[in-house]
Image 1 (cartoon, rainbow, N blue to C red):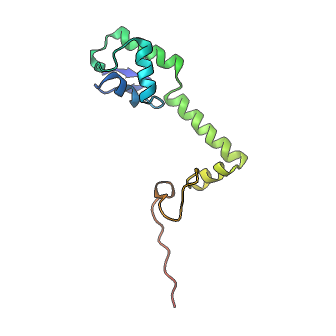
Image 2: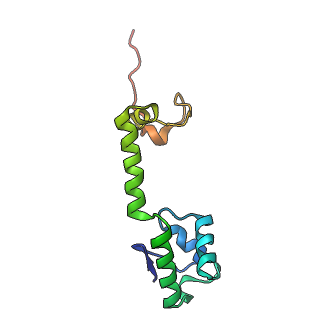
Image 3: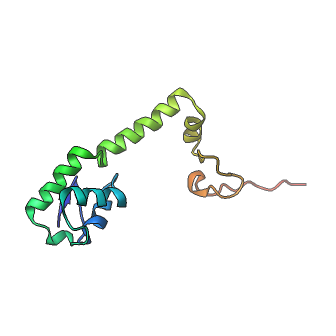
Length: 121
């Protein structure tokens, strides 16, 4: 099993397997394959050690992935919360940030329903 950027890649096509790395999507994976001159439809286990090393080298030097990227994203969110902008406040409250409605839906951000008792007469 190939290991790149601390992730064990499954035995799938190279362009699909690379998307298992946080920070690499389909277009980035295709770009990496083109730079490394590797057929994106070959299986990961069929790659030689030199090809794997080339992929590792490209990803380490040209892309911010895994830990470095997660740290940067967390710091960006923390900065928004520290300056107290609208997006930072929404992050702090755990609500959607990009204008979605919250009266209905938004369960992913808000969490499980909190039942409020009905008014007694």
